[in-house]
Image (tube, rainbow, N blue to C red; front, side, top):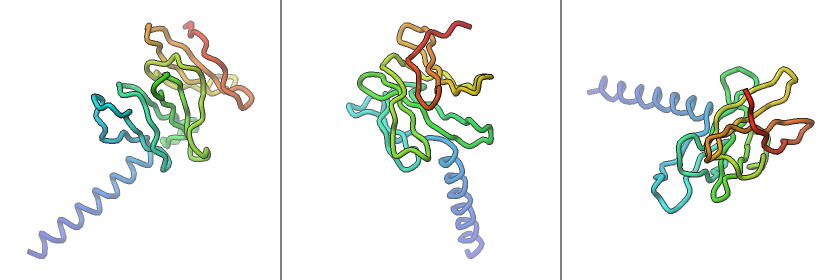
Length: 143
């Protein structure tokens, strides 16, 4: 009987540690159903922010390459604006206008600029990049 309690306690501690490690690395979606009238929510650095209820509505950016998210980019309802949030921001900051349908990826350019890519409802890919502390408007991505 005592071994069973010990095993359950160890499993509970290990599960809690795994849950903490997982949620500290990535923004996590709440349990709001995509069919719900309310927007879906993600949690990042203690902030709960609304995102559109569809696949790829947010992505985690690891600018330093250490496996830990540095920023989260997300599409906010109802206008499909892209916002970002980081551990050093006081909350969501708007990146650009409402063209995004899904988030595609991030990249650090050889120039050092941070770039975020999004697909539009029409399927084209566009990007915005951080230049001198300001995010640019969306530009069409041409491979």
